[in-house]
Amino acid sequence: MESNRNAPSENSTNVFIADLDLRLIYMNRRALEFMTKMNSTLEKLFGMTTREMLGVKIDAFHGSHAGRIREKLTNPANLPLQTDIKFGQYVLALNRHEGLYK
Image 1 (cartoon, rainbow, N blue to C red):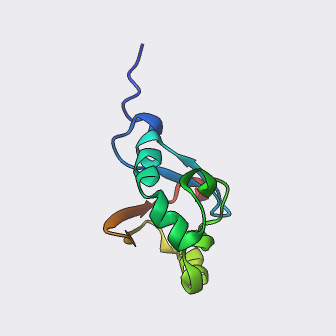
Image 2: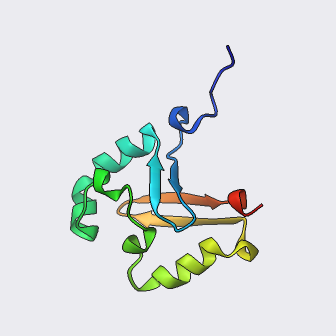
């Protein structure tokens, strides 16, 4: 049987996946554990818990910058894209590749 070391659920990196409408549809175990530790910050900043994040469009997390961020993430001309997202005392690295646009 082949190893699934690179499967998102087994990855040692926080993995978040959004659909083409930028709705958060998946968090691997590591991301879920990390975000659960941040529940009080999530509730304070966004009025939701980690589990409530699933199904929410990422626009909800970006306030007045949502339109600009949505344009960067959905326009294939901007890809691949790498940036950092500051979340409380943490910095999350965002890596967006062409993926489904091919």
